[in-house]
Image 1 (cartoon, one colour):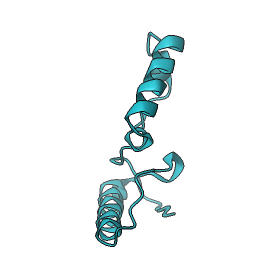
Image 2: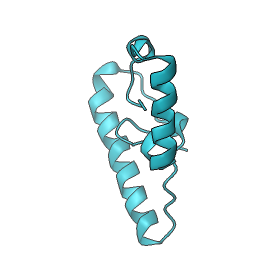
Image 3: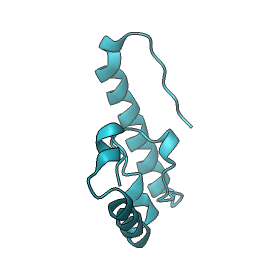
Length: 86
């Protein structure tokens, strides 16, 4: 788990870029060593990581079906905006 912390909001872009580079390089190394697992735990994921895509096509389709059944207007997406959406 990597959980960066910084005090100044003006450093956001620099920290996010460094974190994203770290994740990208780590995944590339894991792939090279044949140790990469596709699952991405949402609480530890960085902004650009495809959390729900890592669940597999069938599971993601089921999540979307459930989401559309119980929230067809997308209210939760508007109330809970973020970068990890089904």
